[in-house]
Length: 179
Image (cartoon, helix red, strand yellow):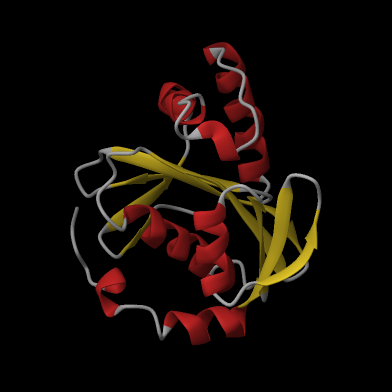
């Protein structure tokens, strides 16, 4: 998979040089309250990326940096747990100063990529129960709650439900606005 460009956003695959940016996102106290813990050691992050790159080469996982047309980095999203006709979407974290709508558009691109390029029929997403704004957003995409545990709600979105709902989303989300 190569760079994906849609809706004025570029998603490019993570490289070792992104370790510092990823750590800045994942260790930011305002951003990390609803994600899994990340060790703040840069060497550990580089090692994690190196292991991820092996999975990427095998077509098992794709971790993207979301950036504007000028190459400014704003967030991440990851497609993983690829299975027969399904994928999981996560590691969705964005800088507080991201352009308006960029995080949502990146999430939409992530789902579209799984359905269109990986030929999946279902997307699963796990959301911390306390992250009520994102829970409402995911429910608004016609996601169905299929299980929960102490920390998370686990949703699935079918390809059909996603595209039916996407048609009803505000058109400004999908304009070629360039950031």
